Length: 151
Image (cartoon, rainbow, N blue to C red; front, side, top):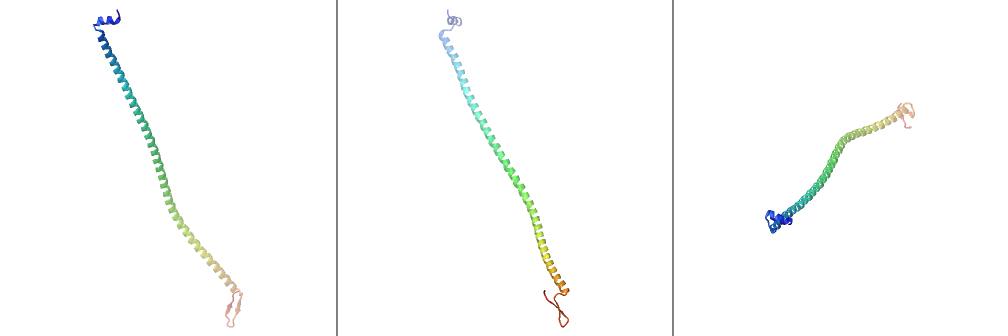
């Protein structure tokens, strides 16, 4: 007696019933395998989509970091420009003060040069008067009036 016959006697099933039950079992296993394959494909797609989203997020974060860096550079340049503007305003004020001082110095220098010129003229006149006083070029007129001649 074969095992199948023994099983048929014991369980009272016919061979056709065993084939039918085996078919159901195989279909169930096939269905489970199909479900596992479909689940695997779906999970693979989800994993791929998640990986793509993660990669895209990283790209976006990198781009945001670049933008933030550029923004920080722009803010730094702006702050430097403001500092330079403040310095130039201060230097303009200093320049205005310097300009005022320079103008004052130029005016003082012009006055000094005028005074030097006047001093030279006065020294020249003083020498003339000394020369006259020393009697150089004196002529006595009949009236007793001295006529001074230029030398």
